[in-house]
Amino acid sequence: MNDPVPPAEALRRRLAELLDGLPPTAVTRAVDRLIAAYRGATPTDAPILRDRADVAAYAAYRMPATFAAVRSALAAFADAVPGWAPGSHVDVGGGTGAATWAVAATWDGTRPVTVLDWAEPALAIGREIAAATPTLADARWQRDRIGAGLTLESTDLVTVSYVLNELRETDRAALVDAAAGAAQAVVIVEAGTPAGYARVIEARDRLIGAGFHVAAPCPHSAACPIVPGQDWCHFSARVGRSSLHRQIKGGSLAYEDEKFSYVAATRLPAEPAPARVVRRPQIRKGQVLLDLCEADEQLRRTTVTKRHGELYKTARDADWGDAWPPRDAVS
Image 1 (tube, rainbow, N blue to C red):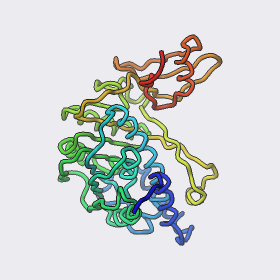
Image 2 (cartoon, rainbow, N blue to C red):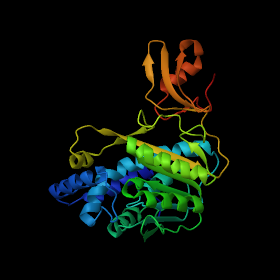
Image 3 (spheres, one colour):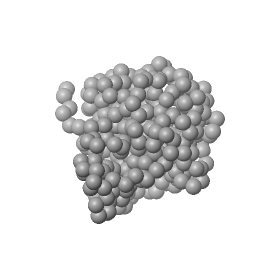
Image 4 (cartoon, rainbow, N blue to C red):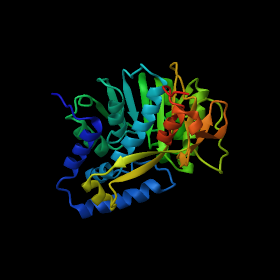
């Protein structure tokens, strides 16, 4: 069976089918409870998603945004390791599988995929959503406790998205260590908050300690130059909303911006960006102001003016999170 529909569109269609017929009030109540649970600061020893209604609400509330954030992180990683594609993928704490869809959107072809989660209802719906998509139809959806004691089979890529916030410190460390011991590449995504950034930095340090080097977003594998408590590194991915999605989330706009922090680290040869745009570029008359994290472990503001010729045009198109300068930019 062929499915020519791009993964992002296919996922939107599957989610619409999943929610079709569910009472909107019940889904809205479940979304409200899940928002409170996921915004809480207390880790848990049990899955937040309890039953099918919870999972359907979660899928409507979170999957499009999680997909967009992970897809953005994977795109930056893929740019740093051109010509490489994972031959296998394990998604730890993957729930309904947003990261598996993001991997399918980043690299063509099929590969063995395993999704691990401790919530069986999430795995069941993830399997259901993916069943009609050839690149994910044969994925394994496996129930497992996420944290200390987790054993991962050898794989090319491990993704861990929006999971560390649910774990205690010892479980976070054990999960990152397990990923580092099993994979050639590890991509970790968390919420774009000071606390999410702190968890990413904690994981980044453990990965570097395990012999990995950072491929993205950082242009180096040295200590982050951001002073803790004064700022945090995060990025933004724009997420298109369907009319059903707007109804469920109570929003009126056709889009939302998902803020996220991430690290993509690898044992593979990689070419990190020369610098990374870490704030929205400021476009002024005849100039563009770019806040950059640079390879010499410094944060600097660079001004690109019309005198820079083609590079100025490139700067006007630059976005938050982009590599700078782009590899094909004309200086």
